[in-house]
Image (cartoon, rainbow, N blue to C red; front, side, top):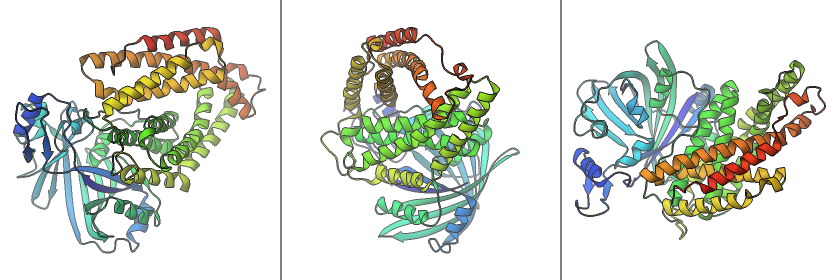
Length: 532
């Protein structure tokens, strides 16, 4: 696959997640900062001297990339050069685990060392990238490096992999905006392992972010693409590790002082990243766990839309949520058959379920590769980054409180809803219990979205207990759901009268499951709230 990366820049605020002593240490050790307050003032405020990067990528097939390069969109490059970038790691992978990468890029006789912070690490510093010209191709780790601030002076690293690149560069003007377009082609190499790299990066040097998406739509008119989410560093680390067959949701670390609208953007981007990682696995290998986690990612994204509904203005959020519901539904058909197949022992029933499953996977792949799905992903990303009706952009509204305040109110409301709907499970029907299951999922997702906002010692302890109680509740409600849906899935695929049908329908004691689910609901409600 080829990757088109569109990079634009926006300022980052310093996170209020570390103690004042730690922040002062960063002021002393990090170069290029502006300090605007003294030791005794609170909070300490620093403005970044260099902007942070926000990257948007597009994946293209080799054929699509050739079509793009052969079109009139780019023309002849303004520059061409050879580069090699060596990435360094500790023997226990501490850098990547903490959200850092260390790279030395060599172009001719010049060498530039770069440290990048992503994920949890990004929120700890004034800016997320540091570049320093150095002599030679060995890392220089001194007091100017954030790595020493984070890991201490005894940090030891070694070369992990190298990216060899042929780079071509274009400078483009579009609607008054200036773009730098870079095409990278080469390989990631570690020992005898090798992975091809074909990337296009587009950086907005000056102008309007919307022009990036004008450019993306010009690409879409020439060649189909998918949004990409992996950096070269991640690609190299994947080359070192065993092949993954699914990606669960990553821990989300929100800044303490972040606004609710900005939190929504980060949450939505995290959900989208999980979806894309698993979508690639599903398309390449049709793996059941990859499909399941892709569907989970879409459910989490739809829950985020519902959770932040008061901040999402206009008709577009509702339309996007509906389109994601359609896509999740297609994946759900295949997932239902996967669940039955794990129980099927009869050879004939298993064969028929496999046939139905293969067709359902074919439908899922067809949906993911459709023009509708591609348009959905493009519309979603453009809306997320550019739409002024999204509170927190230029269309800020009074509802856009701090994320912590928003989270506390939202979690209270969802907990109250679960308490009300789950108060008497034995006296309701399957449809009502299914609604309780959806209430529980939404509360679980919201808790995971906002957990990092309440991560002091007491909050972290309560969070662990709350999530454990939610997991147990979801297990019991899931078992009840299997009792209700198994027969419907068999009937949908013409297997309701199969002689071995009873072997794949759960025979758990329904009344016992209801009692356990009720006990779990009560346990969740009794568990102390980590957000209060």
